[in-house]
Length: 179
Image (cartoon, rainbow, N blue to C red):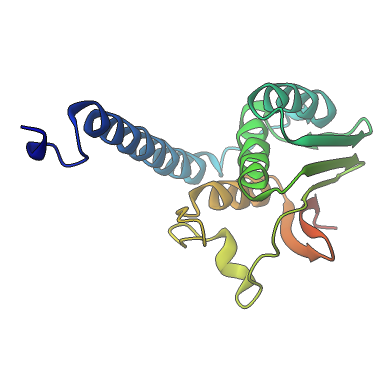
């Protein structure tokens, strides 16, 4: 009777289906969020976001979810132009990406109008750096690039620039003012 289940038995098959459902749900939400960013990009107000407070909150959550990752922070008070909610999703996407590729540690440096998120994982493919932030570009771990395209749209919407830089011992994502 077990041969009617595609993944061995009933429980394993249900687990695989639920896992794929969760993955698809995240992709749909990311696609909707990308469209939302396109819509609001012409409606930027005067709001500012306290990046230090935001990052401290995100790091607190990340530490609970990934206790095996050492997170080192050097955070100065800095406010970035934009709404907290959009910056939160942007920073979470970079940090989730870092957590996916990290070996042992993530370092977050925040200075005036400068944010760097480093992970000690493998270097990124720099053969086409622009494609890194394009949606639907599949990474080497099978990710669809929606998170980094959300990062790019958020950052540019508020007048900043983002780049990924290979370091001797890992990769840094740097967000800074365009000036």
